[in-house]
Length: 306
Figure 1 (cartoon, rainbow, N blue to C red):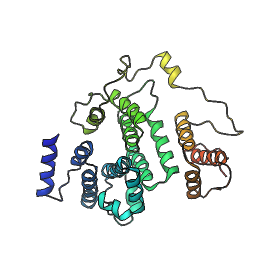
Figure 2: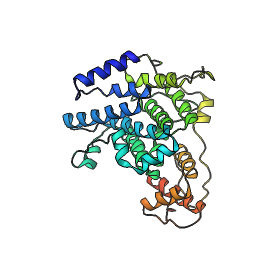
Figure 3: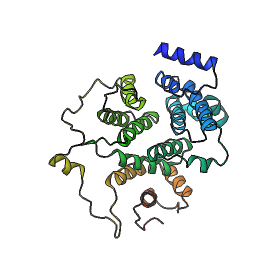
Figure 4: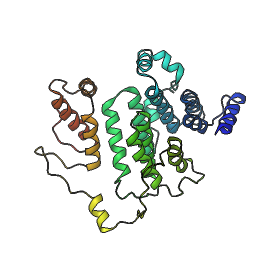
């Protein structure tokens, strides 16, 4: 890894405008978060100006660097950085936006990368409701963790990996490990592939030294489904607790519920304010209001989101 890092560094010294965003991944996993962030920011600007389409992967990784930088900083340092945006910009440079950036970013045709980009950018901006919604949608695409299944577009693999990266960057080590193990289980090449996305789950788990505990399940048969798996992977819809509430995807519902219950009172008020919702009431009232609002946005209209 040291030789690879040195080689990538030499490329950028000789050709500072070179497009080589994978060098940022090397630096990220070498814990050079600042160096990785600079590479991803520069690579995103180079790609978008050259090809005229969104550099979603570079944007995702750039935001991952900011989240990781803040998470690994000391508590006092983190407060200083958040209070001084100019200092953070100097550490992890923002990406210079092209004109009509909102319309420009919508050009991304790959649904999975739009969702992942939304997840990381919302986390960076502190938009808790958008962050929870994007995370819930990705968790739904990832599917059951009891009987994982590969799909031709590798959406499940990407979902589990990026969820694992997200949880790693916000300091949720246990959840990150679970997601990365699922990504590795879904990897058809066990990390030995020319496709970088097949390599990343193995790389992440190796760098974090997560092969020291429980073994992987050995009886998973990808693409097939036994009767017992059908029972465990297709839950029975719960009885509605609120009259008229539409039954929702249980993975989305569970993810949103768990996320909402972890928010602090001030975060709940801020999230509701951003959505134009009422911000008065007890913490339980705010949790319920935000939950129904997010479920409505996820496509499960309940009619109970004042």
